[in-house]
Structures are given as C-alpha cells and as structure tokens.
Amino acid sequence: MLSLKKVEKTYGLGTIKVHALRGIDLNIEEGEFVSIMGPSGSGKSTLLNMIGCLDRPTAGRIVLDGKDLSKLGDNELAKIRRESIGFIFQQFNLIHTMNALENVALPLYFMGIDTERRMGKAKMLLERVGLEDRVYHRPSELSGGEQQRVAIARSLANDPMIILGDEPTGNVDSTAGAAIMDMLEELNGGGKTIIVVTHDAEIAKSAGRIVKMKDGRILNGDF
Image (tube, rainbow, N blue to C red; front, side, top):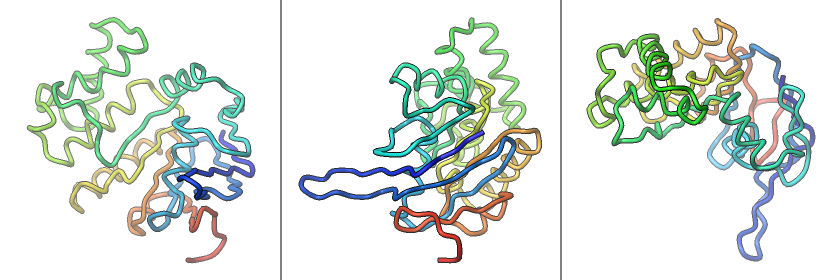
C-alpha cells in the first residue's frame, strides 16, 4: 500500500543544511498498524508529513496506493489528502468557533457533500467515538481526551484508506491516552491502515510493528 525508497529531506537554514531524513526505505502493507518511534529531532514527524502529502521529499520516491507522490502536482496531492488520508494531530487542530458536529463535518464540506448528508455522517461518527452527548459542544467545553476523540471522528469523515497520527496522545492524560489507542486499535481491527508517530514506548506497543528512528534514519536494532 505504501512504499518509500531512498527518501531524503533537507532543509536550508541560511547557509546551514539540516538533513531531516537520510535515505529512508520503508514498506507498509494495507491493514497494518505501525508506530514510528524515536526521540525529538529523529525525523519521525517529517516522515509522517511526507507520507501525508503535507511536504515533498528532497530526493527519493513515495508510492501510495500505486501513485508516485513525487510526480504529482499540488492539486493532485491536495485531492489525495482530502479523499484518502485521515489526520490526527497532537494539538487537535479543531476550529474553536465550531462545535464538535461542525468540526467533524468540515472535511465533507470540502468534498462537496450536501448539508444533510454531511451532518448525518458527522453525528454518526461522534456517536462511534462515544461523544453523542457532546455533539453541540465547542472545543473549549471539552476535555483534552474528548477533543482528541472529535479529531479522530473528523479523521474518519472521508473514509480514508490510511490514518496518520502525530503524537495523538501527547496532550492528554494517561487514561485518555489509553482510550485513544484502544480506539485506534479498534479501527485497525476494522481494516484501517494506521501509522502513529510517538516517542512513548508504551504507546508504540499498541501497534503491530514498531519502526525506530534516530538522526533521520531507520534503525534495525535498539537505540
């Protein structure tokens, strides 16, 4: 489903070049649950951004569902993000002037789905993550764990082929974090491909496979 071949990413900071990714080779099969684990600065979030079409590699190829992302234009990449990928961020990234229902329905608006259908699906997804009694609450009225569940529901709105989580438990307590990982495991059990970036070994254990990174490279052994 996903193949990365010799992927590199270099950022220029004035006259200094920062090598965020150094020749990444990685294959992920459909239906896998993979944790990408490593310390801060290891390149794991940069790698997730490449997979999620949020950034482009400096060199190498990324093939997602048969499409070579390195050969696609901005509009084509945006279409893939919109229709095929679900994102869960550490900071939740909810719109604070919208309630939970409106936040979850937002991706469907950009897909051109009519109001009745998108609100109906958004409500169903909030019920799925156990927030049927928080549908009309705004983010400021929700706990961190509840906000992340809204974000998970939103990530499912476009029925994505792959869900990407960047430290999805980083801003919640351990109890909420465990519940969020249980939810992701359940989604994986239903056939979703899930890739989660984390620095937490306990969180990483929820995955079927752990990919370890350090200094922009994938490690074969321990740190």
